[in-house]
Structures are given as C-alpha cells and as structure tokens.
Amino acid sequence: MTESAILPVLSACVLEILPDVAPVEITPENSLLNLGLNSLERTEVIMATLDELELRIPLTAFSKAENIGGILAVIASHGA
Image 1 (cartoon, rainbow, N blue to C red):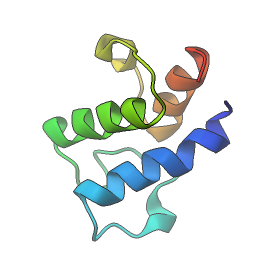
Image 2 (tube, rainbow, N blue to C red):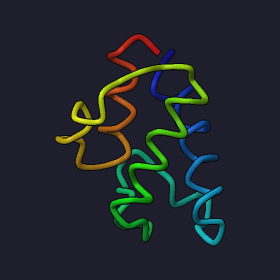
Image 3 (cartoon, one colour):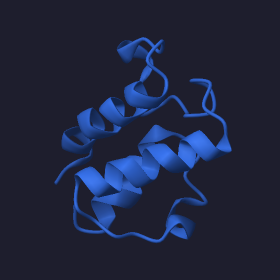
C-alpha cells in the first residue's frame, strides 16, 4: 500500500478524534501536533490507523516521524 492510499485512512482517524479539523489541513507536510492533537490523541490516531489497516507496528517505530508524511512512510515501509 502506498502512502497516498494510507492518507485517507489516517485522515478519517484524525477526524474521528478531532472533527473540527478541516480535511484539507491533513497533509503529509503538516503534523498531528499542528492540527491540535495532544500526545495521547496522536497515539490514538496511529493506533486506529493501524487497526483499520490490520497492521501491528510498534509505536516506537513512529518516534522519529516529525509530520504526517513521516507516519505514512513508517506504515508503508512495514508492508501496508
């Protein structure tokens, strides 16, 4: 699965937690922090995305992801 195919799944998970975010703001260049998600919410988004994709990736794999693009890259590199 490509990063562009993963983005809509991640976007849906963001919007479940933070429905006031404009979908156009959920871009690879933006970060979950900039969207207004706290650390717990960011973890919830990643976990929900992984659940939707039926993947198991350790959360530590996302520690260096500085933006949404980084999260997408981690997921794609683990065989999504």
